[in-house]
Amino acid sequence: MPASSALRRSFAVIAALPLLTLAACGYGSQSKDDGAAKVAAGAKKIDGLDSVKIGYFGNLTHGTALVGMQKGFFQKALGATKADPAIFNAGPSEIEALNSGSIDIGWIGPSPAINGYTKSAGKNLRIIGGSASGGVKLVVNPDKIKSLKDVKGKRIATPQLGNTQDVAFLNWAAEQGWKVDPQSGKGDVTVVRSDNKVTPGAYKAGSIDGAWVPEPTASKLVAEGGKELLDESTLWPDKKFVITNIIVRQDFLKEHPKVVEAVLKGSVETNKWINANPDAAKAAANKQLEIDSGKALPADVLDPAWKSIRFTDDPLASTLNTEAEHAVKAGLLQKPDLKGIYDLAPLNKVLKAEGEPAVDDAGLGAK
Image (cartoon, rainbow, N blue to C red; front, side, top):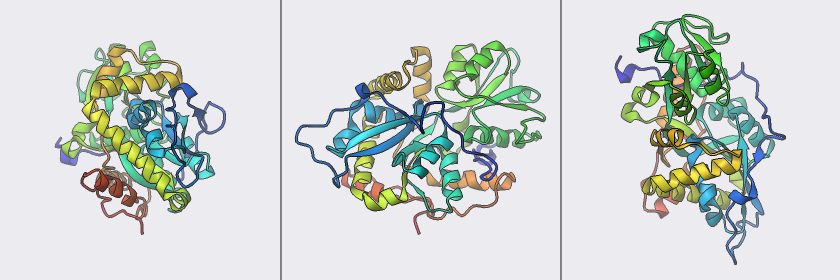
């Protein structure tokens, strides 16, 4: 199967999926204070704003946010305006928090970003930057699955009904000629919707035969004896596809553009530092994970997981557009109007100041 014809990741049926809530109280759990950088003496607030609320997930594909918080890149860029983090477990919950004003800026996957943009008729959020590519794998039980064709008839976990990896697997299965009902997950292969936190346990217990999941869950399965059967990046040109974007409330962008630029500056500096110092960055991300969740990742999970993720300022907008096209072709979504989902002007301003090339919105820029 040529890579150019491989079915890309897609996103959820917009009207079909309810927003999920977090187990933690409120919309997102607060990061402990010991992970927050101190405000430099003499620093001033930007736009007179006391704080900016920043959402992200406690996983490695949100490594820019993890490292940026841990190493103080965001706080340095924001001066005396506090970088106030909130940790989420699910994209819909983060979108709900953005809609309600509980967060201002967030790191999030492409599916919930598009879902949130479309459900608000393009009135609430904008994608303002990229963060990461890759870090998604199909890991299987090598005793039951020897090759890709052996996946047929097996039980494969995905994180959530209609989430980015769920639809990616459904689309990949369709390319193999297999029929699966997207709602029930039943068909030539059985899709088991399983939270990433419980998937390794389900694999160990034998209730699933594999999983199409992001890092570090994929590497956790490998540590349990699983075998990496497919890296999703191999299905994409240049092995690049968006896994994490940066989003912002449109009203916050309009009212506090300097604060948004500061967060983006912190993100750009973080990514530059990550790519120049991969081992130190990996350690910083793991330290922030421990602060946020109470548990660090062991080396046999952390090391391979970190290697599979590329950190980039480029939102890889063309890959987002491709995901939408394939979702429509698969009959999972009515053709959405994504014009205006990106506003990359603030990021390109920061990149220019850093002497870096501008990034492209693939024709989906703000109207």
